[in-house]
Length: 301
Ligand code: HXC
Ligand code: NAP
Image 1 (cartoon, protein in one colour):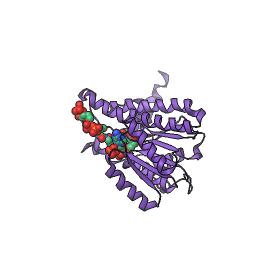
Image 2 (image 1 turned 90 degrees about the vertical axis):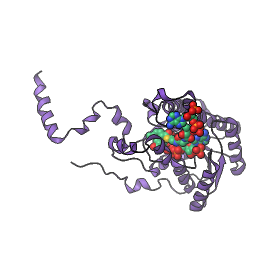
Image 3 (image 1 turned 135 degrees about the horizontal axis):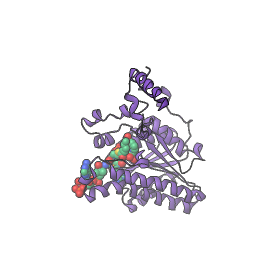
Image 4 (image 1 turned 135 degrees about the vertical axis):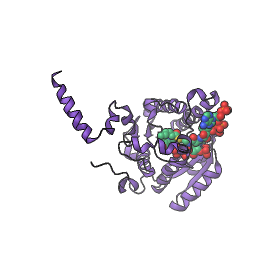
């Protein structure tokens, strides 16, 4: 029986938008020095954007900024900013405006997460994740929204959530609560700030391997034992460029009428978990022959 190819098609690994699609836009990415933030930033730069990357670790940001500038010739501002602190967020926004003249897009990508039975968590452990993910996204959206409304700039917020923002998930409860809150904020602000021309959308990624996520969510042997590929209908994890393509579309004007939407990019993973009969993938062809005989025989019952 044919099975799905485990590698993404070549087109998915190349840039999707036309050259200069983001020219003239200044984009802030929180958590932009590593992982998916770095992948999105590199592609935004390639499409002509001015880029601001921020997180707590300035040395990491500066190294990423230097790499990106060498690759693209674009301009990257690296700013240390803990998104939990509103004053730091305002300072980061001001340095971006000072450097590039204006800010058009904020990508709320910074996150904190780890797996743990909830009853083992201290109140501080719970708060540490909520504060980065929910409060951090609120802080950045609030500071940017106030600025855009005051200046009459049609801003754009892109929130990076997860698919368990829809469903909840055991063993990552602080993250599930926080990402669910960010989804609610996405939809709420879309309605409230639409009249100011401010767009607000979210991306819900499935598994896209990064060091930050894998070290905390699939440490040691867990990566093999709970390999996401096995339960994903498309039988593979996501490639960073696939996410970058979707993000670039959503922060560009090509998606101008998409508003208040959360777009899932997960190879079908969360629906696999939702379908009551999804586990029947394990049934072999000869077993299906038997099942057919038995279920057809049940016609008269
Ligand atoms: C239980 C833990 C813990 C763990 C920390 N704590 N790690 N409790 N299990 N693994 C507790 C600590 O004991 C402390 O509580 C409290 O949490 C705060 O810990 P600190 O280390 O002081 O916090 P801080 O330095 O702010 O670091 C935040 C962090 C850390 C979230 C704990 O992991 C971090 O910096 N993460 C950033 C990057 C990240 O998480 N990337 C992954 C995103 S992936 P006490 O009570 O002792 O003071 C993602 C993917 C989603 O979101 C979907 C995947 C498919
Ligand atoms: P990552 O590399 O660990 O990225 C998280 C980033 O957040 C880091 O750069 C970190 O930098 C920054 N950060 C953490 N706390 C911060 C704070 N208080 N203030 C500012 N920045 C902070 O992990 P990733 O996998 O790329 O995750 C990126 C986003 O994708 C997250 O929103 C995550 O939930 C989402 N996501 C990822 C996956 C996946 O499979 N990888 C799946 C679904 C959703 P510092 O430590 O320097 O602060």
